[in-house]
Image (cartoon, rainbow, N blue to C red):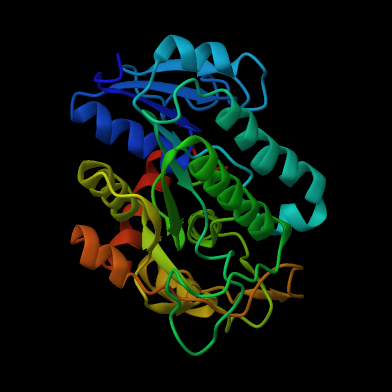
Length: 313
């Protein structure tokens, strides 16, 4: 029954996952969502045409869900995503990101037929590189428990691939931003800054603001995953822009768009934060003809438009 069009997306009520759900439903795929967040809290993000199962990925009953849905593809988005939170509570990070993924992998019935797509990290797995963009062959040297947990999961996936024949795709995205990203958490500076500015609140920057990241708009990541699945590729792929943008630049660009005049508050750098990283995505261009198409300023405006459309506190 693996010739069906069923896709199971963990974390499908969240930021990236909900965008993926919408995209694949528009294509006519049958979508199942596993997410431990109540639909009452994220009702706007849960596509009504998807089957929603409220469940933690560490739940032992996840095997029953996979057996029932018999998905041809699993896209694993569910995870703890904050570098700073992982540094404060490494055990919780490992329970969510490592043990939760192992529970999912061990619940599969047919490794040869299931295509497993893992959303890893390109922003935290390599460590920092201040001079050149890094490709997939660059040595991984994570500086945070979050990066360590993602690298550990990647190695487990390789083990399942070698021992059980699991076909897999490992996506290493840069810093994703866009509509639906949580503006109240500890990750996602674009949404956090924009939300504070819209409410005329002060904005805090950790460090001197000269640290830089590779920011990529959520729709570009979705487009990569969609194309990679269509091409049936496997292995590890960076997904980014290769363009360094400092935290100060994020602040100034948003402030200009929103006519925000307050100065930022500079706080001490947080444990686990790196000084800079950008990603080389030539592999994605060469193998599936993918490149990002969304300009940074356009992505900022789309994020602001979304935040304006929801209740701001």
